[in-house]
Image (cartoon, rainbow, N blue to C red; front, side, top):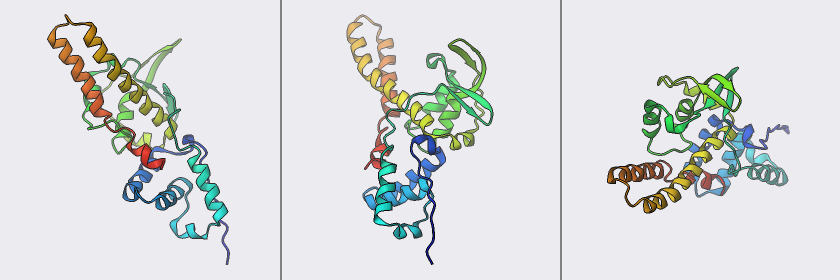
Length: 220
């Protein structure tokens, strides 16, 4: 007896949650050199197609779904969203990273890399905190206390997460270009300040040492 399958095919990263993405990435790692298996995993995690039904798809349907998934898989155009509402609560992105609380900075840099992995929900919970007040283009958020609620970020769409990720990636690239030139221009700068600038640049490079690994696997 024939079965009718209904697939909900995402058309953008707005239709994919962080939880779905992390589950997909965990499975893709085991099949990084098998394109057919990767496509099957994408169908399973992003469209809800159980593996036992994959072979029942017609060739045309398979190619159509595959094309639709790969049409939005590159997230490089995602912009940073300063405000995110979760369960009726508005959260604001850290408005001034240069004045971020030491505890928040320490908790973020405790990770070996800044990458969308099992630690990413924690990082988002540090960077986004409930909005206290807004006035024009300025706003304040609750002080960082170290108390995190990581689970709420698992249901947030991936376009929000990619926006933050690429914000840091672009910041990293800017620092890599700016710091060496700045050090050359300020030859009389005290050695201690030069050392601090170098360390900050090296820290950013370490945190974002391989930020595109997961994207490369997903876009194969």
